[in-house]
Length: 245
Image 1: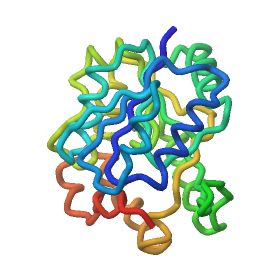
Image 2: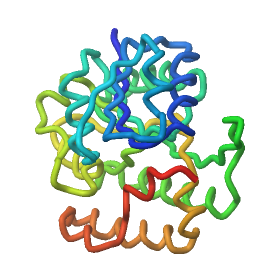
Image 3: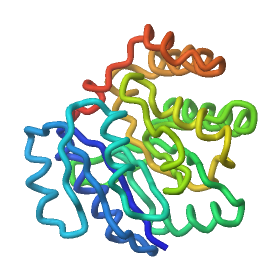
Image 4: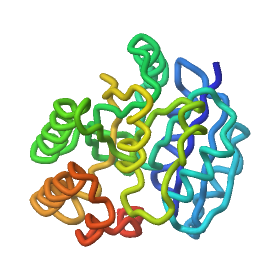
């Protein structure tokens, strides 16, 4: 069994090295890590090139195209698409694979748990309002996982077989992650894994809890009816999200 981790990135020198360290410390070892860089200029790749586990690829700043390229070039049996600012518990991969096999899942999302990162790379729980937002969104994902499967691009699990047989990620849609899950779940079994994935709270901190939470609620309505192109009228800047805070 081989595991491939695909990480799109752009100027993530303060986050990506910590994720790579988490990957190194996994109880279940990774076969390969593909970092798909969109032109980092902050020294991110200086931190990455020294790691023999990592393969570096370069693609223009379109996150759907980055994910697609990574999936096409991955050689593992199981693919984990992760954002560069997530953090992993030591048994994240082991728990994910074990549950996926037990439930016969070919596609899955996670329990998204917000964290705040300190300057030394250590993490601590986010504020209560942000934690509440994520708990609420996770609950929605859980309730509607069989009717309207959803997840976030910060963490998606899929078998290589299911990925190859699909059309992969869109390079024209802004919310390629949700569209991918919704489309692929039509012919493979999807489930929300009971495994925590720690996600950065920096978008909430930058723009405000109320603003981002309401944006997510409005977007969820669009996604419920598969209106992915129409959903792009909602302001949601990935380039700002990638900027260090």
